[in-house]
Amino acid sequence: MFLLIRKVIFAFLFNSSLFLILFIGLQNNSNKSKVNFLLGKTVSLPIGFIVGTSFISGSILGGLLNVQFSDEN
Image 1 (cartoon, one colour):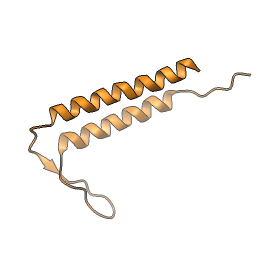
Image 2: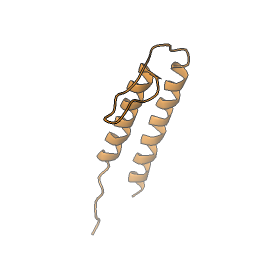
Image 3: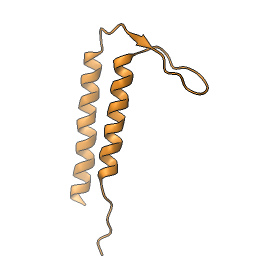
């Protein structure tokens, strides 16, 4: 159980630090784009922010899916 909590905390801390570095790196970025959804578009965001957040969210989901929930009986 301790290992499970430790893996989850590590995944969130690691990805939060990547997100902070992403914000620091994108402060002076002028290339902006919109994401097209089925019902509309998003506001203009830097391309690096869109790519970075999709990478970080995939990393979070991949880290959490790797955690195995087992029954110890």
